[in-house]
Image (cartoon, rainbow, N blue to C red; front, side, top):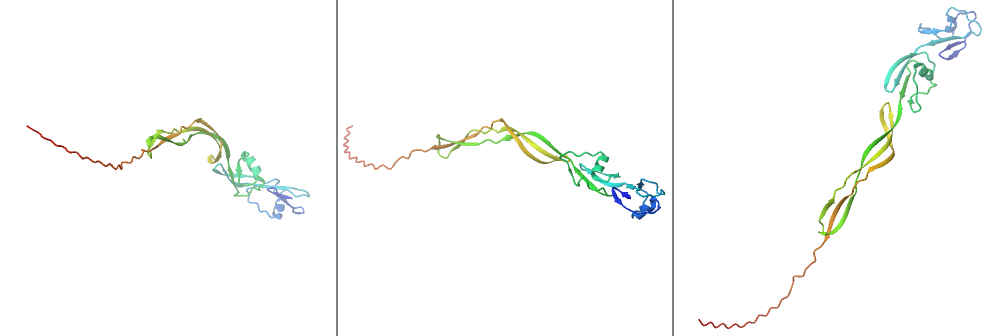
Length: 212
């Protein structure tokens, strides 16, 4: 039996050597492999020959890319061998039972959740009040509005150190806003009727007799 990177190949070699058994299994050694038995050792019934070889894996962890030579058979073994630990929220582009092959790209995105508190403004309302102390149509700002403040708690999601999403968890008013009040005049002058019909009949008879 020839085992290459976890995969078994059954061969029959009567009285042959390890090297011949490997050739019979269809492998040609390049010299970079490790063989569990000497190549000139005699193969007997039940002999297991294990062949391991380094594969180069392209690992990108939190945007940092490195090429790593490994003899690991699966991604899970590779991560353990490389000392790479995944947190429960982290994202990996391949399953951990994926077989390692030369040139395999493994991408890990590190996900972190944080609670952040921000101070934000609270808009004031505009209130209109009518008054008969001003003429109709005249407006005047009685008091200007003042913005309030609130503390907003966000649950923020970071992927590889970058904020990708956030949601409001809670809000707390720390300063109430003050309404802006505008006065609107309603006073109308009464209308006077100046169309009078006067009938003046002046019939004066003056007799001025001046004796100087």
